[in-house]
Length: 418
Image 1 (cartoon, one colour):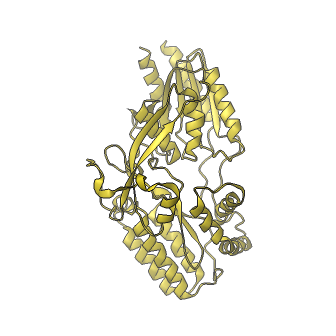
Image 2 (cartoon, rainbow, N blue to C red):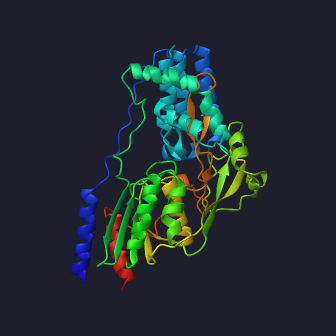
Image 3 (tube, one colour):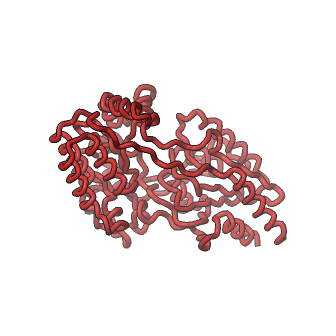
């Protein structure tokens, strides 16, 4: 029996080595924008001050940044780059100040600039998809079309043809499966949760369903998210969970938000007035860190819900979810759901977080330059009140330091079988 489990471990590890995901790409950006945006000194400063004010009254993760980066609090970051704009009469310095501010503040709560390549995809969405319930997003995207044409043209002239965006891995590498019926184990690795508009979405839906059915005689299913940093919640709800659900499943957590001038149109798009509860009515939560949450005005009950598929898949065994620091956003919401509902046992190390209160990042538009900045409006809370962004989710079974989550899982499976 021990020899069989050693063989199983080797088989899985060799499988993963042979089809390892490509290394995370590096960001690319050339700041030499000169005066391409045609802004006056007053307009640059007005845009930067608007950027700072909006983050302070709308974005609730500045406190997370300050706690994790006490050597450079947000106030110092803002002061440094405001001074840079004042001392340099150029659009290059302005853009560099915005970009560098965001870089130093970190990606907490999806905070980042919308770069030209990503902007074009958003604009295509505005023109081809129904924007019902997303009117505010559409309004700001379309309002910045001329600004992004100018920005992209200049970047292209510099030879930066991808507009500074990151690129993903090779097509067709998102799913990896391995079926070991003699060991009673099925293994599925998902590196990203595609949107239902992605042309590969229906292919993956069928591939996962076929795999679940092929695993009908297995006692254990391992779903590996260790390289998955998110995507669309509908992916895991419809493709991963629904085919295995015996009945409706749901879990509810709290998420905070600020009813600010920038957030209000998004709030109106997404929530009914009855969904919003005054922050004063938030129950006492032992690990709620209120520093940095002064702008929060309301909370909502954020519910993750899955209805069973019309036809259940053949697999009926135990489900194990492999997680780690890369698990973030939509993949984090799946981890939260699995732990809360008992759908799967979480194995690995603490996740990256920001999966509670999940909602498409909202945007602020700088009034003169037309540049768009995205951030998460919702500040999700774990059941104990700790920040989902800050604390992530602790697995049910923690891997010892240096041990891959897969090895820990195989040992746990062996123990579960007695």
